[in-house]
Amino acid sequence: MKIDEEHMIPDSLVRKMQKWAYSAAISRRNTAGRVLTWLSYAIVVEEVSKACGSSGVLISAHTSLANGPIIRSAPKNRRKKWLPALNTAKKSGASC
Image 1 (cartoon, rainbow, N blue to C red):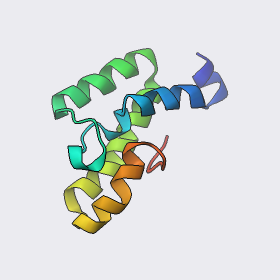
Image 2: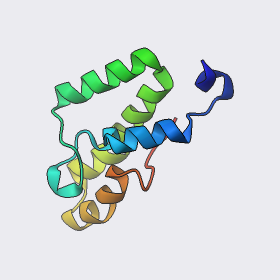
Image 3: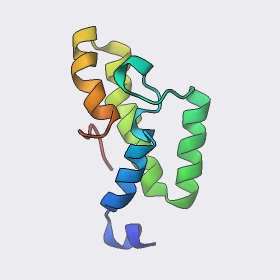
Image 4: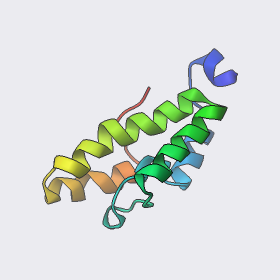
């Protein structure tokens, strides 16, 4: 697979994931995210990973390592500052 050979996820694929807001899978509506249940999020990661493990890890890392702690623990002003940019993938919080 080209991604594995080049050790790089193409920008075009990242943009598609941005369009579908996979990076915002578990966020609340008021932070510009497409809201999914945890089960739906797990299914998204599983299905993407079937086609490309690296892309599944990208979604999982961004959601779990960047968005998750902010959603669970950050004060409201920090959530308002960071989550819209992270959810729309204008900023990357974690990568693989």
